[in-house]
Length: 201
Image (tube, rainbow, N blue to C red; front, side):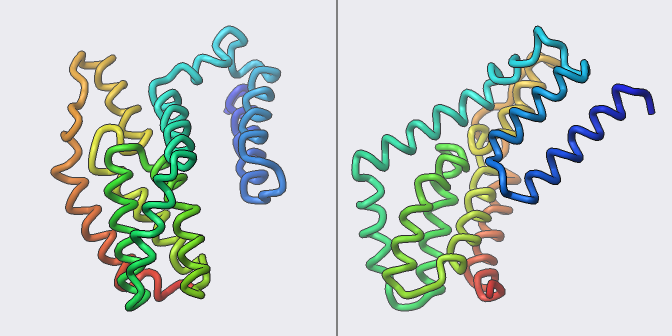
């Protein structure tokens, strides 16, 4: 292991410890890790911010803006009222919330879908006198599973598509991930809706 590899290992290990510790904001930890990489010389100064121009980063940023716009426009309230009608059992509430989250994740990116569904989930959990954690964790998994369905569903899909374009000249199409992603998403959502939430204490 040379000096640069050692510096990268130390920076990444320190960043992971700070992420797990949770006392500092995640964006601050990430920015400090980048700064330390530049200071240590493992990240070229002229390329320190090139990652922010990556399509995955821009897509996630745009989706978060869209999610905030949807919340401010009242769409969140409409979704909350729809889900609040399902009162017969916790399983049905979790299934409806997770199913909707997975469907939104497939077409508006899983991060944006989760940002949109978080306030809805917490509000409905409080109204139903449930611990928010019993629904929040299944919703988190559902957003990840829904992101497997399409090209724009999750940042890694976009990154892989960009790499394939640069290496082979042919990108993935919107639904190239669906054949594998959809069955995995359906099985995963079914599991967290029927069994997974019961394992959360």
